[in-house]
Image (tube, rainbow, N blue to C red; front, top):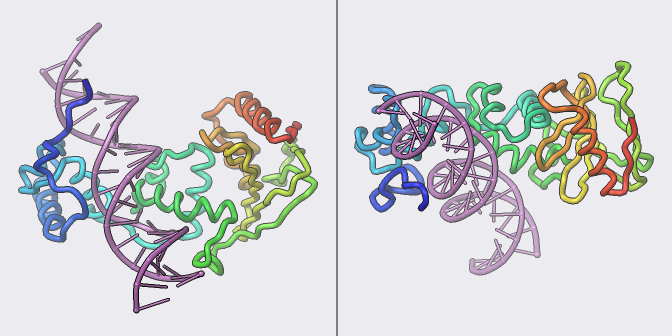
Length: 233
DNA sequence: AAGCTGACCAACCGCGCCGAT
DNA sequence: TATCGGCGCGGTTGGTCAGCT
């Protein structure tokens, strides 16, 4: 037996929110708060909506100080760094960007930023203020993410791979797609680090002590070996 | 001008977590 | 301690719109 539905699906409205519904929800919450019970809220507010839907609408669009519109280069940088360190933990990333919601950031990453970082551009994205220079390297060399005395080095196969250098300085990403996994090498000016991103592997970048470095090395090694490359330290 | 395609984004869905009982 | 219910999260879907053919 599956989980009981959170609301009577037959009697709740779905789809886009009407301005009147927004007004009702906003007015109710501003007057009474959420009461700590989203399931009961729509009934109290006179809305034919699922509690979850109300919660989402409030958190993503109606609550005060929500920021909409273009992401700044600084926000891009924060998202990239956090994604590199913790992966798709959108709520945590959103917590670092006041006014942005996890849904907003998730959509932004999936539709724009990921492509930007990968150097894949659409016509509408070309000539934007924030751009990466994309160039190719045949003799694969670890792009040092700092000028410090880091001892990490990297060599790989001789296939031509994109290397991304941000015009913002501090970003040096080398991207590889191996068996569907994205490998990112490089990062900002912090210590070298190797981070598992689930479908992504990241080498270099902000210091992160969540992941065991040995595990990441193994992951990198196996991935790179699968791709015909070789990782050296 | 019409149809097609891809990008974008709002909203939904399902699951895991956690507190209350 | 076990069960239940609500919340929050991340993944996915589907509608809309703009650009292209």
